[in-house]
Image 1: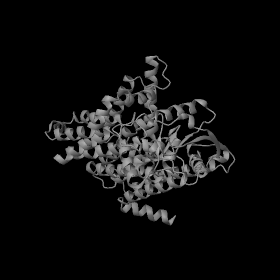
Image 2 (image 1 turned 90 degrees about the vertical axis):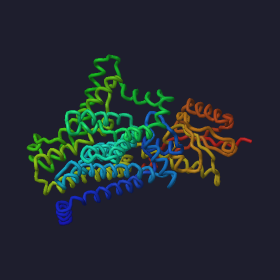
Image 3 (image 1 turned 90 degrees about the horizontal axis):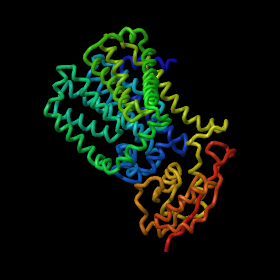
Image 4 (image 1 turned 180 degrees about the vertical axis):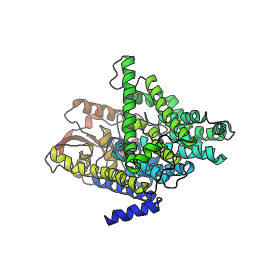
Length: 504
């Protein structure tokens, strides 16, 4: 209790300590991710596999996160550390830039620390991102950067602030396509404010637009030539469980939008109520120019999502899609408190401890769940023993160094990338994979799959091998049973594999 009291007193005196505690939290998150499992989640698998290539487009998601991941893996090699580092560094930078944005518009020096804690109180940041998000994390950072640049441009306009705003817009557009709603909402937001409206008609907006365009140009050209590939997956996900009835599907889409907004926003509001209690309720009616701007921006973003959803016939809008727009909610609440002149003398520790319990509790839960779950027959993606399987296959041929691996699915492809970092890993479903060269085909290779009882899978792999110039008749399928990770050897997974001798 004394330690908690000391921390509480220190936070009350020096709210800037929050930033160092947030940095420590993300360092812990990286360490725990490395310790909790050698297996991977879906987005982690995608990033590890796709980080082999530097491309202008990777499918339905823009490439910003992929480019960052590619750069880090080029520097330190493919590893779970490299995957976790990029994500948690972006989340930390999101908090830092968000705090800088809050300093511009808040008078109370404690409230920027409150705003940063409010970011971590968001389920999308403390729960969904730590479980498995990538592109959404990049979008959160882009929104925070745009918010900082936007407020700086409104309060202290300069060529640099405009260029920074253009940089943020460019990054946001190649982070996730729905980011486009944010700058549009920002422009509409300031139209009713005469002293802010003039920033739209400033000549410095032209270099800002040029910077944004330059950043988006390479990927934009790719999208023009691959429009279906860039949009089909997202539209399909949005239209999941569509009935074909326009009215019912529209109502379903709006219903999921409202539910996602409540699921993402109510926890933040709950944490603020814990910290400020009646003060927050009394502050709700307080208003100034910045509460109006931020409140309108949140509302316009949500309306924009709804309009786009209706336009595409969306029946399902998830919380992670809304998270970039709800990122402004903690700042909005802080602006309300600032406008009301609320007493914040003990607010930082009051918010810090429950938010820390949520954030640290969840990353600890993820680590423990991998060990506890198998005892009750509950196996997740991080219990898949793909790593031990590949290591046992390699042990059959000591000294073997396959030049390439053909995998049936993304999970196996990503683990193969970890176990064989020098090998080319190919995935039949990723059509942008560069073909094997003659030098690779001349060396031994490995084909792996996770459904050996499925003849269609093996037929697909043989056909793909033939496309790569590998004689499919040389594939001699074998199977291997490997225990789930943390199962104590009680339950196994059956894998299939085949060695390929080099072509003459």
